[in-house]
Image (cartoon, rainbow, N blue to C red):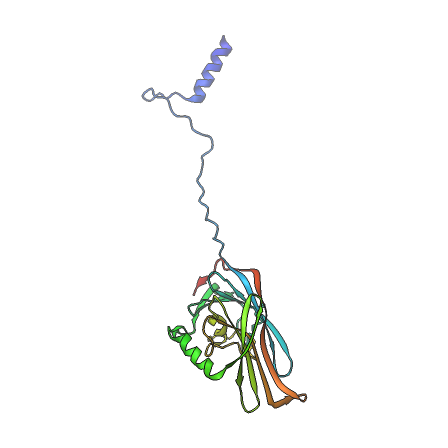
Amino acid sequence: MKKRFIALVGLVGFMGVGKEGGQPLKAQSPLAMVAVTKNPPALVEKLVFDRVLVYEQTDYNGSVVRYQVLLNSKTGQFGFDRKLANLSFPGVVGGYTFVTGQPDGSYRVYVADKYEGKIIMRYNVGSAYYAPNRAAACRNRFQKRYHPTGREGSQYGLTAAEYKASLGRSDTEWLWVAEVPFNSYPLYLFNELALEAKLPDAHSINFSSSLAPNELLVQSKKEYYSEKVNGKPATSTLKLIFFGPANHSFDATGYKFK
């Protein structure tokens, strides 16, 4: 009987009975729960590209350079990767990583700077290239300079037509051009930006003065019989050697506009 009484007293003492007002005190938890606020993880932002265009450039001395340009076929956004596009960087900072070109003529340059962090710089080529009458003006200039040969060909899902232009008494240029469902100007105008990074330009890709936005250069070949290299006419070419599916993305997480 004495053991039960001691046990009961111990149990009551543990639960607690207050003497003030005769009200029982609430039991206190031996450990206090502290709410911890965690910063949400940074949202992962990826720029996705599902097509790639590969151009091969051959200059008058026979040197060959290839470069790849990425395309998001749904948004029309072009992507210029530092290595894939074989970009040159005379004097540019080493933090440059990626450039995107939008169908509206705007460009975004992604730079990982050791002082400023991850930043995005804006560039524009000007509204004149995207004026409503641009396509008609290009067509008029093109028809004055180039004449159809009647030849057509299909490759990589593109149907291209051949044109010929005179560069002088005996010098000639041949063009192959295809209509496409995207705006090609972000590609043509990349080297016109006030940006040190440049695509290989021994044979220029900029046909924005002759081709409409929905026309893609498939091949340009120039033959100069007035100039000889190793006893042959000096020849320079730029041709599309692949256009097809790609699975490429650029991690833009953490980049902020400067």
